[in-house]
Length: 307
Image (cartoon, rainbow, N blue to C red):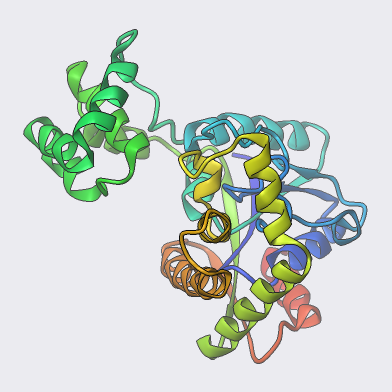
């Protein structure tokens, strides 16, 4: 089984820099595991690494689709696994860097949980029903055939509610499909390096400062440009933290001050979820920073761990 290195952790923890440093040491290339960096024209709010931050290391799975597309986990697994296999064929090490835990786990494990049975036209019919009846009614319908899945889904998660109903209507259960997929042997042998902070308040302070820098770098102008392109709050890309809140302010639904506070609040909440997710990784190295990231320490610990 081919080995890959994963650098992950909460937002603003320093994943990009450590990933680049390790890629240089390991003769590797970076494979982004960020569900929003896949979208073109969304640079500031997704904290995409600049060419300078990439340090000459090839980066993959960034700017791969239009923001008008609804990119899925299964598409990521298909695309990113092909990238990793290509890197390995060239005798290099894939260094998977990012904070979207589901993408990382799906890629390493080789999940294909969004594929499955379906009927032509059924998805469109269910999407129309969702728009007309609402998420609550659709979840009630799903609970009749797949109550386990229905309990896990939020009524506002249109994509997954519709997908679960599509499989249920075709005579299957997405819960059973997921269990079967997860039982398969993993695609890659992963070594996980998880970044964190001894005091979570220090991480939250870094997150707040990062949001302020995004505003200074033109986040509002970036969102304004996306709206001019024809994107709306209904597009998946515009549901990302930072874009959703600033979009609401630009559309007059709240003040910019309130939008910025919401971005910071939601970013801190997301970081908390990321921290919880990372605890599930086996064979991991936890690199714990104090007030600020110490990359010399992180590199030393990581290389010792990987050797």
